[in-house]
Image 1 (cartoon, rainbow, N blue to C red):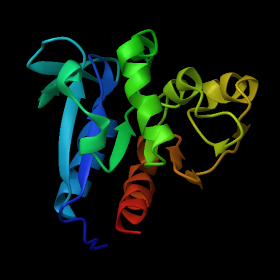
Image 2: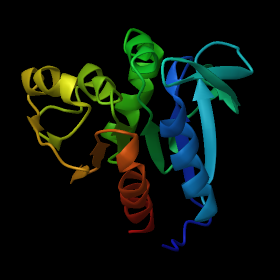
Image 3: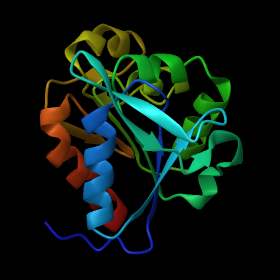
Image 4: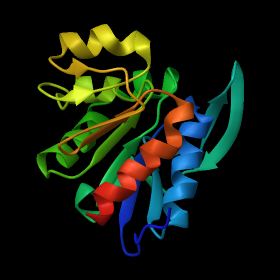
Length: 180
């Protein structure tokens, strides 16, 4: 599907332990549709390392440190899953504040797999329909979200998906939100 995303700026917030495919594949698809995608990470690392299967995966270049990132510079935020990545980010107040800023501005916030943990921590899940990896269902429900088992759930500016198999629908939903 061809999307006209030229001029659209997308931030991907991640740290070590992101699910390899959930960062790289949406990034590849969105860039292929014309968006500029910036990988943002806390700290001063020039690379962050993914998780693939049951072991460490490839490293990805960090384009910008979280301390220098400004939510106003981006049209949307993507939050990949993996267990380690969102669990680390949700105790980083600067990361949570960055996510909150996108929500407050009404910009698309897209989270996949375990990424919706960050929607819980930022308060964005409350009152919204969402999906996630099944083990997060209770966490999301307890945070006031309505959990659904679906490939992709779009509710207002929130876009969520369950797992790597859902990436095509997830990236397409992000692209539609950006194009609309």
